[in-house]
Image (cartoon, rainbow over all chains, first blue to last red; front, side, top):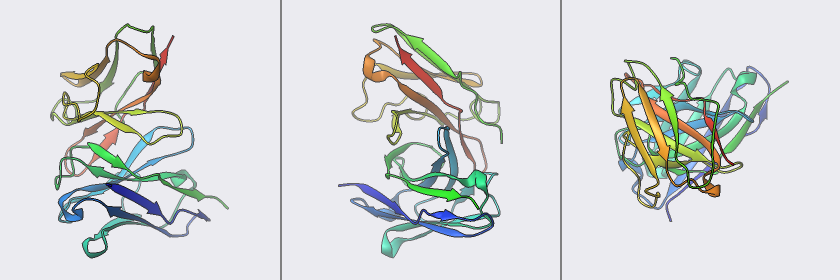
Length: 123
Length: 110
């Protein structure tokens, strides 16, 4: 079964750091671009960051650029999101997603979604 | 980065057709045929219904169709059914290394 499972969400204070993880199974990990998409409570979807299958191309939303860093470990079938200098507006459910178009990451065509991991930034 | 503009809500009766618009600019929607649409029911993860403006993923009903004219992409749902009631989001490539979603549209089936 093709699956993405996120972990690492927590309640943290503003200014602190957190690292999210996403473990993939059921497909060839390095052949697909992967992304993080978040959704604040009661709000819409927001693209956060994406990385190509081979890791050579990375992108970030302006709202997180310079604070968040995406990476992947093909040996562990894992995707990560390092989040630094967290702000209350980063509070959201963070989804790990797979782009069905393969290595290219700019299609925004996510066919597989994880269940999400909740990040709450509050003092 | 400006979010793509969608109507906050649309509604229709069972059997009717509705269209949801997604307006961007000449730098994103107007420049690339890289617009996708998602359906999201409350408490669930989004589901891809259209990619690359017009392509339906396997398993998606042919009642869902996509199109684009200029800087505006559209999602049309024909033969509206009760289970179509959900939130719908567009997503587009904005050039360089950036993607963005629209603000979302709540579809109500009357």
